[in-house]
Image (cartoon, rainbow, N blue to C red):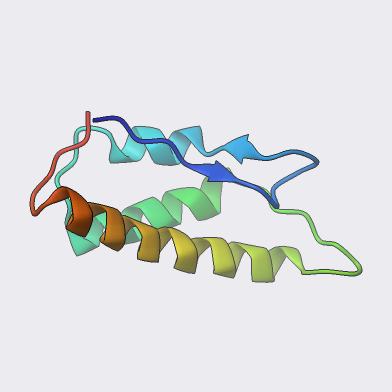
Amino acid sequence: MDVRVALGPAGQVPCRAQKVEQHLRGQAFTPELVSAVVDTLAGSVEFRTSPRRATSAYRHHLASVLLSQLLYRVWDAAGANQVYR
């Protein structure tokens, strides 16, 4: 299996979070991995602030929460201890 992570509010057009994808490849699921991947996301993506929509800080927070929830759902659907290559 492979993994792809895309983000919408990080610029003019959606982009891939390639450092996050690299961090996930070849790893077995653990809560520690989720925390590390969320940290990778925070350190590798610059979100923009929109005067009419959301601040950069809010977008970082939301992306971190959604990524964490997504990882738990994906690994649960794939089966325990699934390793992504």
